[in-house]
Image (cartoon, rainbow over all chains, first blue to last red; front, side, top):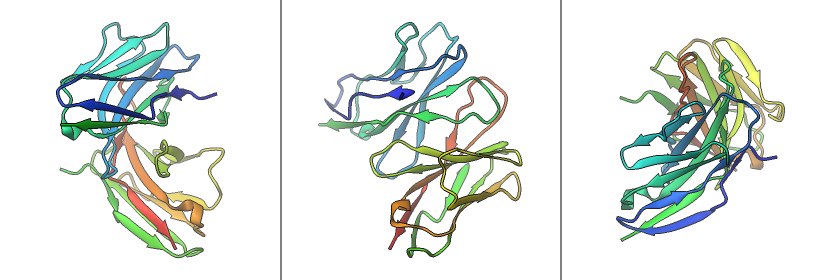
Length: 116
Length: 114
């Protein structure tokens, strides 16, 4: 079974609009972390935002916010006021049980295209 | 300002010819990871080092090996590259301790196999 599911292969939005990228996850751990990374065409993975499983408030980082619904096991990324530079691949990822060296498990990604 | 550095950015090798990709970090993180990412797919973990301890993923082919001579450097060796090994290889680091456990990624090495 997939641990991280991103159901939107591609999303299209116009500049200055808000967009939500969906992510659901599957884990039996109580302690885990959820991450969103952006990957432009150049290839580097850029960290955007983090949500811990025990965090009661939704995480925010500038124009990025994470809509965390624990009971539904969803961690959607909201980008407000989209910019042309936001066009990229976006990956949702999870880190289970804070054990030493535990790696991130990635979803398949969503390609976001922002037009003027 | 670069924190996780991968060299080279692009690597071309021949079918069956051994190739080594390198990664260095200035963050003094104790964990280093190698991911393989094929076109339009999610990054897939190959293995990681926790300090000097090597941790291989169960489905990582034997063709892939890694070395970590010191904290700062980690190498990915592909002993006999096949056409299916053409991919982006991403190195990442993290610091054990603290709750966030964010991974810091390098810019990747794009490997082509001819």
